[in-house]
Length: 221
Image 1 (cartoon, helix red, strand yellow):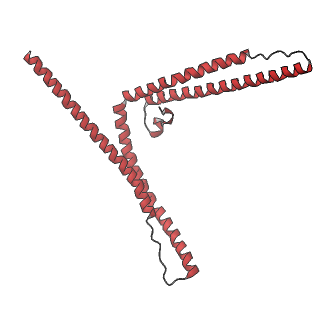
Image 2 (cartoon, rainbow, N blue to C red):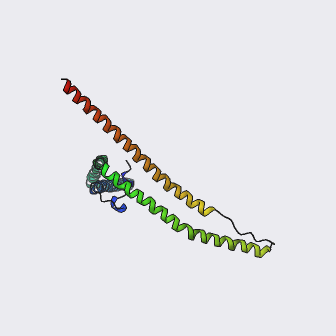
Image 3 (cartoon, rainbow, N blue to C red):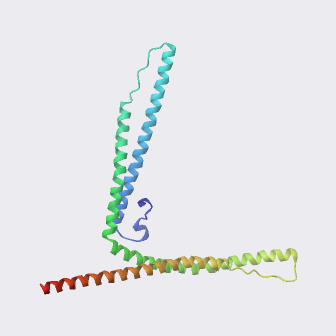
């Protein structure tokens, strides 16, 4: 599950405490796991370094005939490594459980949140279109000015008998493509709502039919 990439509801204007708390819990577990894994790695590297240093010191003492040095006291570091490895594994196992809690929270509020987010989505689509319409004119004007100056620069250098003003549809086409994506989003949302309404109507019909048949069976009995 890619819960780490989910946006925080409040950043998009939604007040979903159950969602936010579940997402925060997952984030805390992930952060603790990464910290425990990093600490365990650092401890492991430290133990290896001290072990190798001890071997070099012992080898030097043997070669020189000096007394063997005392071995390093690594018991505390090894105990810490065991504890951090244990913690990292526990947190790794806790992550899917926390993610399951997020899924259950979404399922419990699905109808409420889906309706809310879809209403906000439609508003966002309208706002996006307005931004495109407002932005296109200054972009188009700036591009057209630059193109006229570019053509004038060429004309001044060569002075042909005819000055050909630029003709370019790049900006309108680009903004049209952006608008088409907003249209696609709105269309898919409308289709989704239509399918859900049809399914709801079908479920209602089936339930009413079953209730009617049950009443008929009771009457016959």
